[in-house]
Image (cartoon, rainbow, N blue to C red; front, side, top):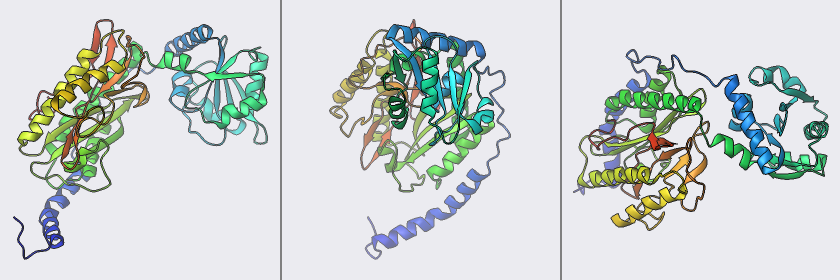
Length: 421
């Protein structure tokens, strides 16, 4: 019971003073960790090559023919990387790729950026440039006219900004503008062995970084301190850190945390959600443990989430709608007394998301998603349970669909006492 001689503010100051020595030393060690035991794990990694990109274009063109689409328009982002290799940021100056239903693609580039663009262009392509006083979409229209594609539909990749198809409609009024999802999703959702190998290596690196970081978590550390250790280990192992979300105590009750700073303390939940990239392909793994001894309630919730993961993987059957996986988890959790549906306490987010070049990409394991599960599709499996005002537990491992059913990239941990296997 609190000593009545002290106000709540005074007690908070005393508590902060007591943890300060731990916090200072822990932060110092997180800032300068000894990484000498870690070795680069990317030796022998095979980047996406010319043959793989050729097959991507062949598949895209086959899907265009099947969908009645004459060309697909793409701007910078993961789809541009996927089809052309070009790594570019978005700005008011349009950098575009036009994939035609037949023949080589066209890259439409600002004139002064062409030399730099060609540094990452990885496919044979025609390049057309535009000057600062010109309309880049008129250049696109010129290409479509030259290829006699103006009477066919033009598919727009789903992340393209509005002003680009709007300008195209003015430059080419006869064009029928449609969604390119049947083409772009039809290619990117189905991962090839080369893509799966890169995702597996990224996963292996994240697991190795977790196992190095876990025994170095100390009382008084903040999420940022732990994240710094994780990022340093990931980098030394050869991965490019993508995110390190560390939620401590009550912050773990909210899937993406809060603005408040929490510190590791005895009996507190630590939820780690981390990932990296290898050659652009992503990992995404979450682990939850209790610092010190776990309470009975923490153990119960951890075990329920573990069952949720197993329920999801068992429901991931070939040919079933992706949403049916989420439905199976909701039924289990409602049987535990959570929800109903996405209500709290319970799981307020989808069971999983697609993953590949993007950490989150179509399609999702979410209620109502009708896309059928097929070989090569990749998903996260993360049916967390969150109890506002207390704590949350999330276990996340990714899997990919095979002809024989789902296959893990990483194996879920066995217990809260062995959170990294």
